[in-house]
Length: 392
Image 1 (cartoon, rainbow, N blue to C red):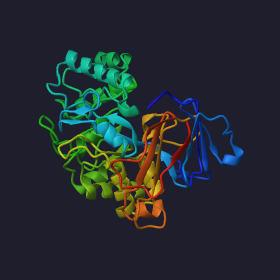
Image 2: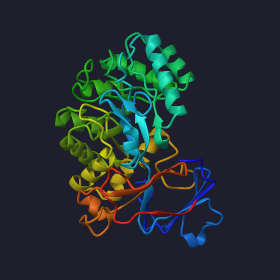
Image 3: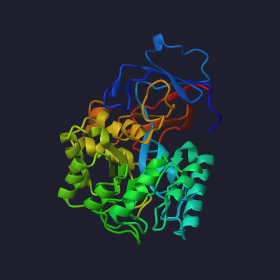
């Protein structure tokens, strides 16, 4: 939607959610961005807001970091053969998602499983989402699924080519903890982050990955600990939370009861910083454009977590775990935002109270790298108040 504005000012903000568990609500009513980066956050009277290319009047509503979906399965561009659906990424942008992380391009028809083919596809996937960002959404892709026969040099080659992720361990031929552990260690050595499938089979060729395999593999992220779709037994979920210090990923395309169990366990351990959110879309259950917002509302309402904390699960927690420059509203970070408000006629005195009662907010605008990418969402319920572009 145009070139990056040199200077963006968002003023008249009613509530700023930081994305940081340590201080989820900021004392501020204005954000100034330059060249796609947050320059200042505070009160308008104290900030340099002059000569802005674009000024957004938030009209008293809420600004939060753009949401991060930690678990998606893209294929090519904004098309998914899994559901024969176009523009699914754009639909997720209308659900407030500005960044996506691939857990493997496993839905590619004829996905190669030989070493040359899988490396070539991973590098190609990384390149095409680096070169083309659907609707401006940042898609971190190129996540090869490990197969038997891979050696350390294969991971070095992938890293040298720009690959930074592994697809879900367990979706390929490697399903034992010992073999997975060696390959995960090689990946980590070369700066490639890993996610492991957790739970029952999800697609043909996948299989059960139980707690013993997850613990032995020691991947960086316990992928969909609440199953995708089928979750592990309760005692195994609790065991993983207690015995593994890696990321605890909760997904929309999973078992809600198990997600709440994992959340409660993380809270009892005083380790909420480990909780991150994904959708696992596209999947057999379809594409969930509002999946991250629904997870926030579900965990807040049924998990008894303040809404501003639940937002951190989908923003700052993921950003810090993944080493991203987005997900937190503070100077120096990427200017990625979602502007939202309590849905029209929704119960609750304000947006936080409404979300904690289980209601979805209405998205009024998304911003990525300081550029307005969408206005009133076509997918969320209508917001009570919408932001307005007054300059630019």
